[in-house]
Image (tube, rainbow, N blue to C red; front, side, top):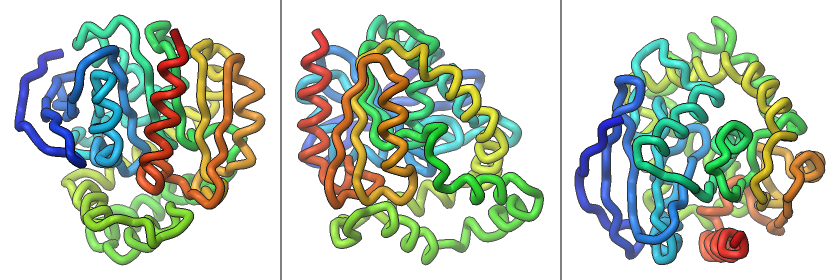
Length: 288
């Protein structure tokens, strides 16, 4: 891995720096901020480091934060044919940690990124603790039919054709991710839309869909091997990953706590960032 510093940026009142790393011959974008023990942030599907714009400043006051844009997501483009599935992404994060010389990390992850974090923790003992916001898991059936459809030839054709022109659908989809759409802050829809309009993004998403079932099977096998203490944070109005799946997931993780947030949707780090940041810091600082 080769990394070089990019631009200094302001993020929700704090200062962070943009970097690029090279993994498997492809460029990976990430933001780095703060000082102290390392904290890796892993976004969900269709996201990027942009997702953590309300969290980085507060978390980096106590930790060195690494907010990664996984290949094929955010600002990290991926060549056609790149494996963008969960298992491949977990291996890339291990490679990123090698390149940064990170010996032990806490990980905060969301949704699809939460599944990647579980696969990472099962395979890499450097993961000290996990905070997972509504992680994709084998017990949630939400969205499975949609995944199968977009894995098909017809679904892939429609996705390639429609993604660049799906602005209104994107707004409506984002509103469904919130328990209360009135909490969506200015610039949010535009930020997500810009990531989706990047060249090659439809092909990357199709690849993820086609890996999905095999990745979830691998996740089923990996979850019982996770030893890192884990905090699950779920919104009671989550329509993307079934809140009812939290309890079976908790039973299969040996050191796991659950925080259910009333009235909150799938993106608690955006919808109630102050609460989310406090839960994260309180949990990881208890893991001495």
